Image 1 (spheres, one colour):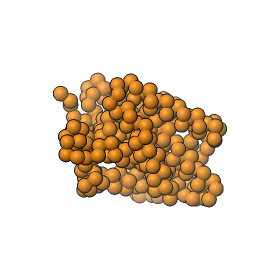
Image 2 (cartoon, one colour):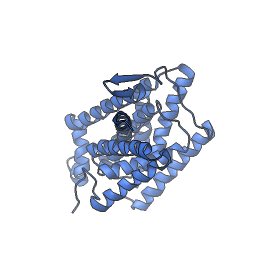
Image 3 (cartoon, rainbow, N blue to C red):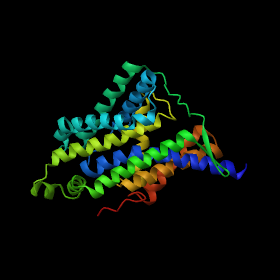
Image 4 (cartoon, helix red, strand yellow):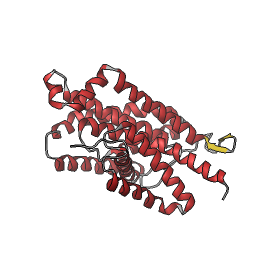
Length: 290
């Protein structure tokens, strides 16, 4: 098989992996600060995908133009969910948090099933079959646009946490919950803001993913599991690790589909997860806990 085919498939996998990484980035942010495992993460992304689908079907709005509206929509939903409901479970046992998030995920999935039915739906943008050639490399336009958008959103989130006072306050809550309370920070409000930001990431990822994927109500649980694999591989709570894990998983799935058969891509993805858990359980970027 010509080397060009391997190169093109690998680049396609990396570009897709950046979108997966943005999806997982939201999960990593939520866990890293709030210490709540968001089991309805994929279901939240499905909400954004359906919102993009409706906007395209009714008004012919490109999914890329829906990145900001979907991010705002999911931010508001996440902020309200954390502020009204999840904050009440912060100090409760982990199994109570788990049951709460799973219950929310099931509710969201069933609402989507009632509203849209079980059939897969997609959008057809004018550039769906366009591509760019860089020497011997051919890149699909939708994957390239999606990867660039994912990098821009991720960079904005990194900048927010690194260079703003509000981002610094959120990082202080993550580092020392009690200390943040002592110095007078409104921890519950900051937790709600963080959960909203994590949901905004997955909202943006959902709009981007609508360029190249079908959406069904059953998509949510699959995406949630994929996000966990990426976050665990990259390092739980690490933002850089989430992006790196997404690229690794995207590349692995693409190459496995080329070298073997697309139906067994998941086997290799889970194989990566098993190897990480065996030899580096803290993840590629994660730090060991004492």
